[in-house]
Image 1 (cartoon, rainbow, N blue to C red):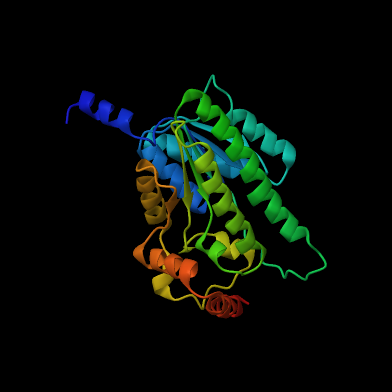
Image 2: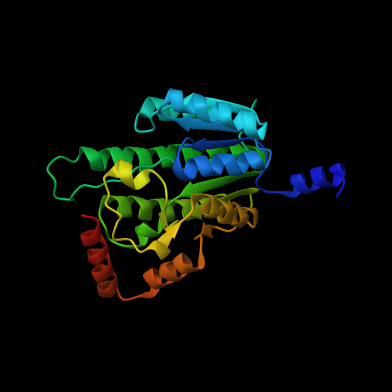
Length: 270
């Protein structure tokens, strides 16, 4: 294919242009940053650690040859969320792809008198997702194009504490956003991964030794499937056949059976 043909093909892609990724220095977020850079997307990376942001930005610039802008922000903090929302709505330097990825585990009992971990999880994975997704949707709707990817989890289909409840909210909210933006030229895809090999579980203090090897996914594979689904304009992306099967069962199995499954999973993580 000629260079001109390649440019025309790129123009026909949904996923193209400048991309902003929250939590873009580790795990699934970093995998998104690398995959988008490989597509030629310039990047805006958002994370809490300025040193790690600088290191990842330098690596992406050197190896992928894209422009990388960084924003240091703790998305549990409302003022920092506002700063990122302002970047998403800046029409002088538009963001065409938004990956709403930043997250953390919430490994605490629902009856714990100290609710700080639950509240921090809600701030990061509900309030920030709501504000930033809405900001991206408004800005993209004005331009008539854009792609939003919201990271939820298959865990949201089971009752396993605050994290599952938060991810169930993210799944439902993301589908609602997709319906609200239907026909505007802006697409919304919800990513529902299963167990992915990243730093996530170690940081959250979650024991994973009991998880069968065949249930683990590679972050790069997860992102590749999600981007392919986003290109097709799909509202949901559940990477791998095994997790699509698990997700189907979680939607259709009797609730008592799902509660037993959730209890077994929780006992294996303690």
